[in-house]
Length: 321
Length: 247
Image (tube, rainbow over all chains, first blue to last red):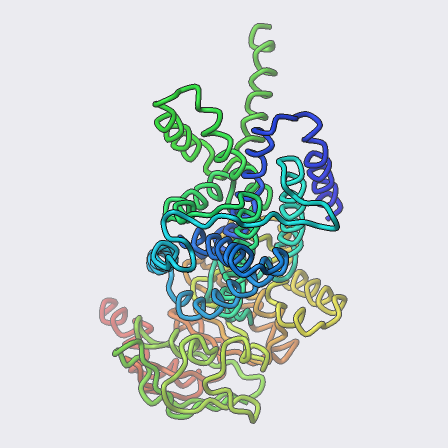
């Protein structure tokens, strides 16, 4: 457990010091997105990686958080923090209620049901024009502020978002190392066995689904208040699939894997700009290669790669001798 | 201790258990034997609440547990070793055992007591202690069976439901596991309901037995009598055939 704390502190230090190395607003802005994506990947990983339940509707919960926050503040003048809280509570409750019927489904059927849920939410964003502004979006969302500090530039947003990221990572680490975390992984391996051990699998699955949705909603609120503008296009089916990819590329059932996966999939398109029109092909190829050669995700694959390189370097001189 | 009255269980439209009644006395080992699809596993799953019965009553220690959710039934003192072991492969041996005590952790029972019981399981199955930090998925079939039994015992059950503990295991390992089952009854007075394909071995160990066929109890009685019963011998022990062949 001590090692876990140590690892976490190293991450905190990196997050704190990063802005000293990068001053450029553009990079800080990309890092803000890495943070939001990390929260979303983390939320999905609790459900997918630990409990083994797929959700293809995560972008919907993310969008609900963003729109609830946006509408309450921009249209009704509610305090942004309060709006964020309301968004989180409403989405958590909604997911809790929907979770009971939906999570009785398994595998492909659950994927289809959550996919449908995501699409319904997406359609509402587009069609409820009076509330959401429809396809052209909702603007004029105020920034968050705290004791006189208004989070209105890239550096301030960076610290705001990453505070939330670190908090949610801390929460998730605590959860997965507890009795609940063990029970979640048990459900993943064998639901029947978990149930006859006394784990209330049905309730626990719904609870983790609700937690995952609530955390995504908070990420949505943060997104709305940092971008000050939301449009339906950011919350479509494609984004749900991208989140699943982040979790799998990063590493299933790994908290740090969520961070790595979100970072890679957010940074990669930026780095691949050099390939211009061919960037999407290179992107696709890289993902295919990674899933083939790093089935455990980055979190297992990268250390394995390093040790493979090290052993090869060691072997070479002895081969000559 | 356990009284089951006129249980009917369905899988959709399939009538899997037809009006089954049976009972278990304290400290007894009762074997449930029968061919594939006779309803043995369904019987255990109905008792543990995984596939609830649509009618009938189940009484355990004077209390009705009919229709309760599995976690409530575990709390009442019934613990199941599911068919095909079903250990949590991605968790360590120690984590698997701790999961067996899940409800005891939930009810804030002292960790010392749970740790003591874990030590007891390691005493019963020394091989599990050697491998306690290993992932359960890397264990051999026999070790996984031991782990599944140990995990169920961590809940401190009064009644242990064992679903085919000999499935797919080498004869020597089966013997080892059966020895432990007998020891559990002898040393701790655990009541055991045993489902087995290996009817002979099960009846040799059990006090009484029930023979299931297509969802119905067709025979019941002391295990020794069932072993001698010509019908059982013909259908499940393959004796007559062998004798014909020998002649």
